Amino acid sequence: MMSKHPLSNPNHCQSSTNNRFSHLIFLSNMPVQTSSDKISLQHPKGASVEILLYGASVVSWKAPSPNDSAVAERLFVSSKASLDGSKPVRGGIPVVFPAFGPPTHPEHLQLPQHGFARSYVWTYDSTVMDNEAGVSVRLLLEPNDEIKAIFKKAFQLTYVVTLAEHQLSTDLHVTNPSTTEVIPFQALFHTYYRAPSADVVVKSLAGLKYIDKTASTDAERSTLRTETRSEVDVKQYTDSVYEDAPQSYEVIWPGDGLHIKTKNLKDLVVWNPQAEAGSKIGDMEDGGWNNYVCVEPGHVRGFIELQPGKRWIGQQVMTVVGGGKRSS
Image (cartoon, rainbow, N blue to C red; front, top):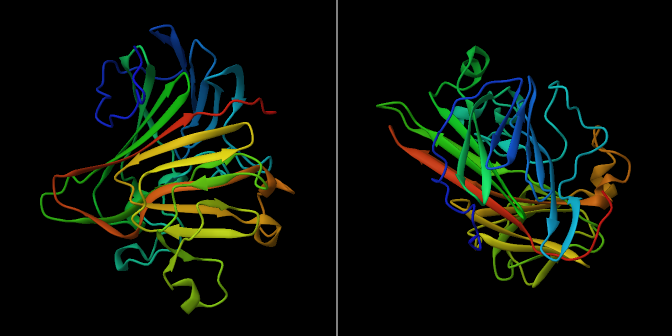
């Protein structure tokens, strides 16, 4: 029997095979198709996911809701997004590492905004079957010459994406292979959920401290505020970073919604640029801000200091809980 959160164990994926590109394999009737630039998973009950090797970016997650068998797209990707590896994808689930936003750590000053993980081609490592609930693929990123030029630390990133009937899990493993050096980093899943921004709300944030990055001055942008709303909306330009969040949230709108559960991701960003800022984003389709909300779990207030020989794992599990049909 499927557990309530069958994908919630970040250590569940152990390698069972080492399949390479351009073939079709079957695990428990769940096909996994790999090609030179992407990986596609298909669940027998309709759910599917597509992952670009460039940036390990999830660019599609389709799933039914528990009480409606119709499959719906759960992620937003701008129609102007570059999917050819020329720049990070505008939408889906970009992986942010080792810096969130403009770099601020002294060891990160050569990095681009949001780091480099979303801007390099990852390697497909293996397809891993845990149990009948789902299928997982594992991708790897290690330093190449270009990365070494801007980030001096040794590291290994492992990204595990797991698909079930109503769930998607993304797990980022950061390993420090050094015997002497600490790796300071931030990490975040920049998830774009397809939802009507006029109606969607995020729950479980009341009482949390946050900063408002839309404020007009540096002093106001760095001032900690307290969230008083039981339901946070994005009807206006929103860019809020919540500290020490509960790691369990609901993203809901009329007739549909998702539950998000995270591990080791203590902060949460809620972002929608609306026309005020969205019209200035070159790869954002006109009016695209009406069709999504970014709910981004991460560790971005302060830095993780990963000790030599240690591993850190951050996870988000997204479960469809709503009922109504939506257009794709």
